[in-house]
Length: 144
Image 1: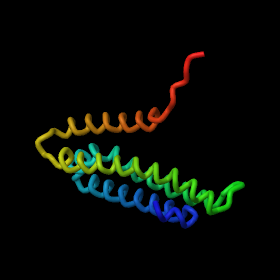
Image 2 (image 1 turned 90 degrees about the vertical axis):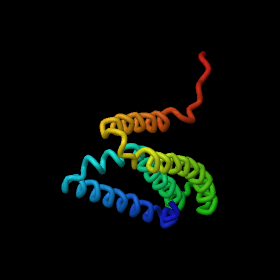
Image 3 (image 1 turned 45 degrees about the horizontal axis):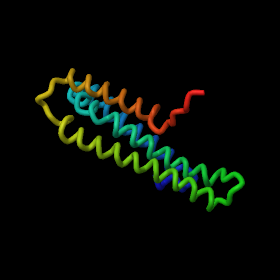
């Protein structure tokens, strides 16, 4: 997030870096035969954790864009406004990471639950995260 102050380049770097690392680890573990173990572990908390990573990157990019294109505002004013929005976004990121941590600690790590159940729950959690991002915060308009 804070690396976004480098005109967004830090956020871009860390988003790409995280994507490469996550992709490399998941690809490697799947290739050597640990795919079932890895994916059943990750699928539950992945919806919240991966979304949080992307949203934190977006908050950093918002800071960088405020410095690159302040519009009619001074760079300081533009950065202040962007920081206010970014901090609000980061509050959501913290909630998502907290949820991911609890799921990872108490659901993902258990071996008692069958993998297909974990996949099913993971799919439902992805749908819930997507629905939240699509519908949360929208105001309802009164019928005309």
